[in-house]
Length: 141
Length: 80
Image (tube, rainbow over all chains, first blue to last red; front, side, top):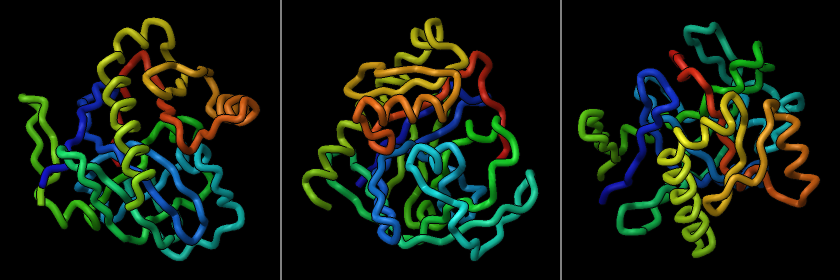
């Protein structure tokens, strides 16, 4: 079973994405969003731009975890969630995970441009096939 | 997964593919702006994400169900 992804040329170098539906069960929020396939990220995470788009009030959220990155430390709240992906044959695939929502305030407006991330907590359940030269990216189980 | 979610996901995949395929064309019109897309159509654009989201809500649209992407004139370089 293959889950097709897409290469976004709005990044330099271009970056692999997958389209997802997400149900943040604890917050009763359902949304659709592109997620960057990021093998460098330990966890799936909703970042500032999508926090705003999804209408999540992070001022009321207590961070429970801290993540380090090149930009420093950020706080995040793990949230019981279901991520739904679509196979190339139209089959629905669900993954129940704790999606992490960034709780630190956005340190710079430019960081709202960063996409939310599909991390290794989900990627590791699949084989990630990525060939920039042929323009193909997909997760396979 | 409910049928509704499956249909919504199919539609969202189509919108995202359309956006990526149309990126160069959209860039000429909406460079350095956020664009809101639904059913392969640009619903609204703005330089400011907060303003765009407020306007979409005022129109009765659901930003969380809408593809909203920034169209940078210069590709984004980032290490996450």
